[in-house]
Length: 140
Image 1 (cartoon, rainbow, N blue to C red):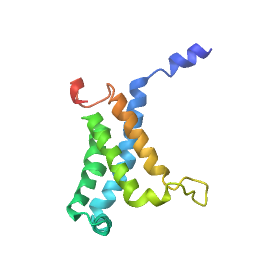
Image 2: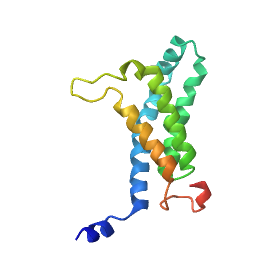
Image 3: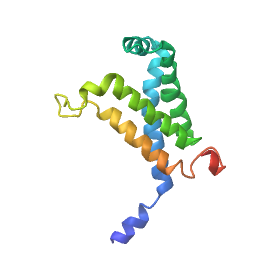
């Protein structure tokens, strides 16, 4: 019986697609928010740390371009690493002081940053799988 369930659910490429849609799709919401409202909030945070404001446009790469590529299965590994790097920057800018904090509901205050980071690292390690709009494996 266990063997039957293992064979029934043995679809690694479908699992990779599901993870790509989840990580890319949810991160894209963050990016779309910045596209629609502007990057002024990110610019202000960067300025507060004494960093140049133009770096804020890197969030567009990490929260819009990379997630779209991840969803489509194009350059998945480098795109996933870019999202992971974006999460490290997000943690350093807005989550560092919340690293050991629990929310009122018991959730870890930086759990969404950690989810995106770990999911992106998993994608970088696994790649896109065969469900990609690109047929050349090197470009997945």
